[in-house]
Image (tube, rainbow, N blue to C red; front, side, top):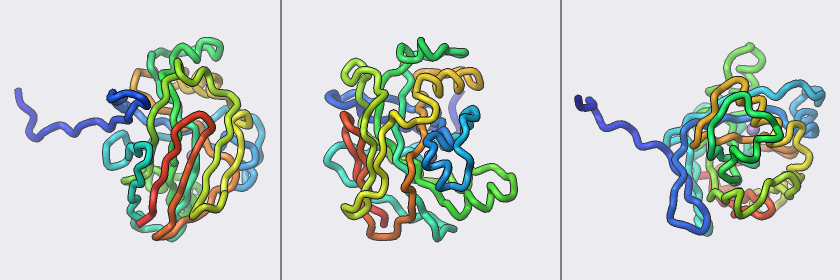
Length: 234
Ligand code: MN
């Protein structure tokens, strides 16, 4: 047997402090997981169960951003409201299903910083029509992600500042302790819907302060204790 064309190589993320790379299997994202962001998006921040969507796992969508590197993000087509969302990204190291929150930590490989880039106008149209969000969320270059830090290095993260600036001006500033659903609770609920495997990434949601960027803007995203990322909209 031979393939009729070369299979695409999976996206991979650098692991901080080594030459190893973490191969990406799936990219799950949580919607509305900070109360203040739920409010700014016009929702009631009650503690309804988290909901999930996915981004593609290919190298066109997942863009690995190394330390001290600035990646160009092409301004996407069909939008005039291109938004940033800084998020803590959790990388799964051990798979499982129906994982209990108290066991979640043992399934985590590590953490990094990600941008859930969003065509907000298209997402809003799809929301209004009760349609899927893919065209607003799952386009090329929609998931810039930084270097992974092993949980053995960071410990379980539950309290860390999360920040994003555009051209040096702070736009998002919160703490992951404000997550509506903690990392452990999110992982547990996701694992009831999908069997998790090593290589799965989970974008855990963005705090308040999302907004639009235009060509020429430089976005810097960071989480306390992790390597930050810098991207430039072209
Ligand atoms: Mn998001």
